[in-house]
Length: 151
Image (tube, rainbow, N blue to C red; front, side, top):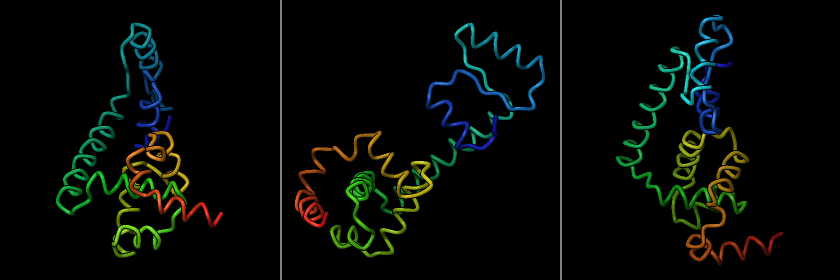
């Protein structure tokens, strides 16, 4: 398998019990199979470094959010508004923020949701029910109604 953080984290998020690199030796494959059959998890030792770096980067990003004002609720609002097909300039106007601030949020949202583009953010919003959040729907009901009128 691939050794990039996206592939590794995706596999575990999707319920994988083990992870081997494609250059794994026969002995390692046998050990992995035995462990997984016994209900344990197994991942190649090279993967532990990748996972540790990933966890550390999440913690650094978390600290950065808290220090720079990237609050969870604001991020949820922006993800919600993206899922409602608003453009960055429209989101900036609705939230009384600058276009640049919205662009900064978008970059951070792409990183933290492991998305490659806006479609990935929308997919994240749907899979985490952010697009259906009743509080956000109430808060932005006028925006949703206006947006629906343009369709």
